[in-house]
Amino acid sequence: MDSFQTDTGHIGTAGVKAFGATGVKMSGYGLGTMTWGRDTDEYEAAKQLELFLENRGSYVDSASSFGDGAGQIMLGQLLPAFSESDIFISAKSGGNRDSQRPFDNSRRNLLKCLNATLERLHIDRLDLWLVHGFDSHTPVHETLDALAWAIDAGLASYVGLCNWPATWVAHAQTYLSQVHRVPLACAQVEFSLVNRTAENLLLPYSCATGVSVVAWSPLGRGVLSGKYRFGTPSDSRGASSHLRSFVAPYLGRESAVIVEAVCAAAEGLGVAPIDVALAWIRTRSAVTTSLLGARTAAQLRGILEGAPIDLPIEITTALDEVSVCALTSAGSS
Image (cartoon, rainbow, N blue to C red):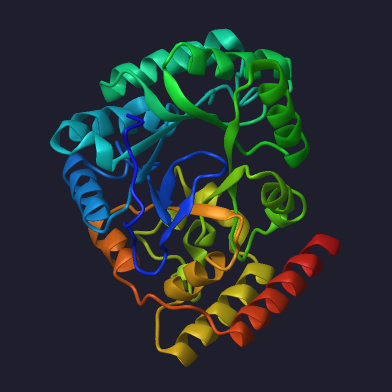
């Protein structure tokens, strides 16, 4: 599906950016599908995809571990209704249900996951294939050789890494380019005002080398929306039996300080906290795309149709200061 190419699409003021050192232009926001097949049913998934594409989105992210493949099955059922040239399909492989080894990046498992993903999506080739996490049990070169093989076999147009330490991202880019002459297109990583670890090494490396950064959970797993300020809503991820632990790390005191700063900025600007959080991440030049995940189409619509703002430098600076101070204090306590 590598026929995708656009330089005019946008969602709000997110605009489009070059996808790293590739020739692809990417929409400023991507559509995450983590809840599909479990919390998001077929109807809501279809409405989400339709809404996302209507707003000129392009990057659709999936993973073999999302709902044990149910999310990809759902996406595969929806794709025939849309033009292939409008969608850039990303899929992550390697996730393992074994809690003792959450990722299995052996060549055997990765290629097994890749074949299963293509079958679920009913396509012959992915636009982007990523390794979902770092696996210390598998030699790194075995994993990287599998990525290069997928390119050579025509099963993926581009390859990337998700949640890998920056030092290993740098090693992977060097190895792939020198040994296989295959570029590393992107590194996908969690990044938001409540999680800025990517700024330590990965973002500077991206700026220096052209490896694209795709940010997942730019709303801090939902907490930057302000919905958890006064408790946990019964219909939120924080109240879900299988996602409670996903949200819990950002329900502490340090995150609450950052959320209050975002809400204060939003009130002053006359917009929603979500608008401020997303506007802040757009100020990070290394970030090509931010993945938006929603349980319902109504939630996604609220994000996509929010106020398109560019943060004044004074507010950006203030948010940076509050965030860094809170996160530094948490790290030293």
